[in-house]
Image 1 (cartoon, rainbow, N blue to C red):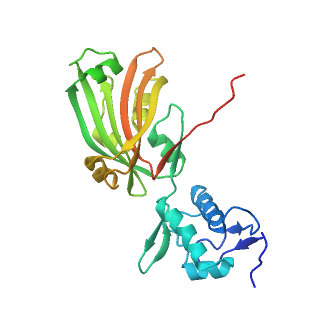
Image 2: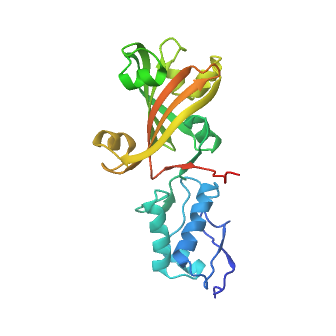
Image 3: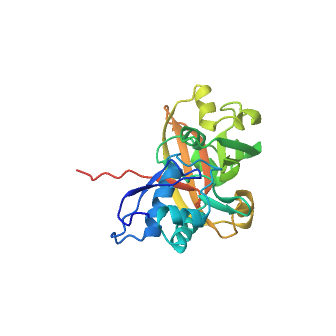
Length: 261
């Protein structure tokens, strides 16, 4: 008989057979939420990888000593977050962990690679255009001056995470499309001898347009995170102006806040 106390439990017969879960039945935190939190932590920490199967709800409820509706509610909460998917004839499968990006001057490509997310990039646009008023102001060039515009779709595990639009001063460096699809923009800047020093950045949120929803595999009106950034090199020159949108279901910014003395 399964224990009714707050002991660690081991699941068997699926990808979670090596994990142990602690369920506290006297806690005011609902059991489904305890289970969902621990499954989410296992996904984020890589103990459960994309493609892993959890087993069916009946087996999970039996092994954990929980009711089937409780297990179903825990799983559904992670399905709603985009961490799990139910596949007919296959079962409940891990899709990915949410990207949690530190708030520092780094590129999305580097952050995804460091987190083991396997980033891939599709370049949608790489051309010279006249600078609009907002781009000119950000890059401190005359309005109408020639700048490079890049549009890229960044994905992890085969699913889109972000749509990236960047403007750079013309002649700053050679922006080969093939290299842009195999590495990050900031790596290319560093390789060209450009030292990134600081940036001004604004983070916001809004609903996805129809075009953005189609690109990011979301429903029209879905929540998006936005980021607007101007990056400067160590001479104070503006070298990049980015306006990016991220799927809120798969992406989050991490902040560390300190009390001012």
